Length: 193
Image (cartoon, rainbow, N blue to C red; front, side, top):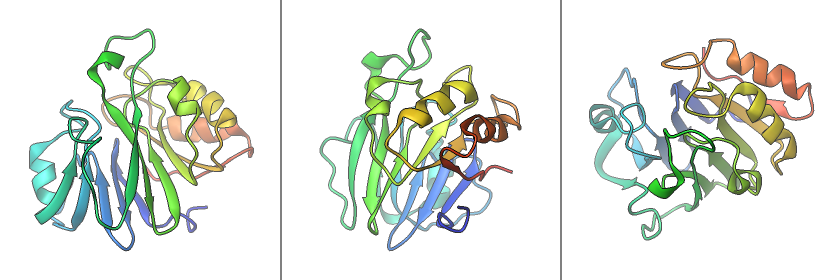
């Protein structure tokens, strides 16, 4: 599966790059090199590890389109379409539903990519249809690896990439735990080293 989704890089934590006919970044964070290659940047919410102005500058060029929860319902992006999906906690206060923060399903190059953002298992998440879903698994501020695996087993998605672990929160082994809990029922690629 790593080859099948070789266009996806998890830079660190929830900092994700998808390269295709256009280059899309999600929540740039801990970006080491100034790439200035982003055609579009999606920001899921304004916490420092998801909305880093200095990292946003490193990936942006003069015509980069930035999609935030505030403009997600109105922005048009040439070359792709997208659907915002509410991202929030259930029984925790870190990401309240009333903040109207999002994950995104991005459709480009004939594939549907779902980047969940900081969320727990929600009814909206379980309804997502995608070719690959990038789910947080680190716990504390998001769902745990166990909760994410239970959700993944129910979703209409054949492949998953765990995120949001091993840096700030979660253990370095959470991605492997997520994969082992799915026990081959879904494809899982580990992109965080």
